Length: 192
Image (tube, rainbow, N blue to C red; front, top):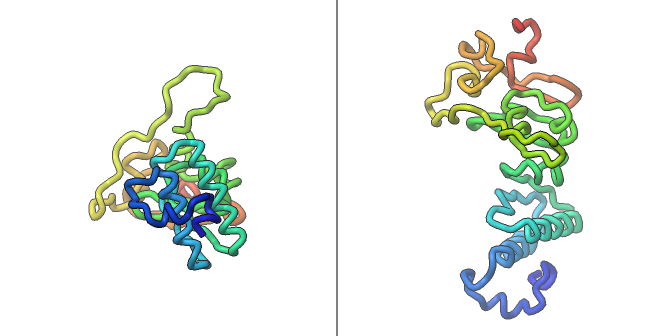
């Protein structure tokens, strides 16, 4: 499997201490170890952290190839929305330990519904933007576990807050075909 993930001298790698391997090499070893078990599901938590862009692309290509061959589903946990756009079919956006939006990757990037998701997308630098402007950001901080607001967990940071947002938590509701959002803005009868 080490040869399969791109090592010409798998024996030398097998006998190496981890600190002797680069970050990309360690990622390849981890992918090999995971795929040796031929799992039905692989959970990849920040799989490209600390890798340069070139190595990151190689790792993702390798992961995509091996999981397709084995018929393995992948849950990708990441803050990197570029990876999400490139790899994901379905996306769950979480805030303070709670799903706030669920959609196909296409729907999410084309028509994000939750204010938090829209804030995340607005904070991505765009190469096609002719104007030099400051990046958008979401003001405030994520509340500590156990200190969540009584209503919507995002309410203290939300620019679109309604009075009911501070009172009770919203449910995850349909905002389109297979697209759901946890926001009072999308609840029927919510004041605008």
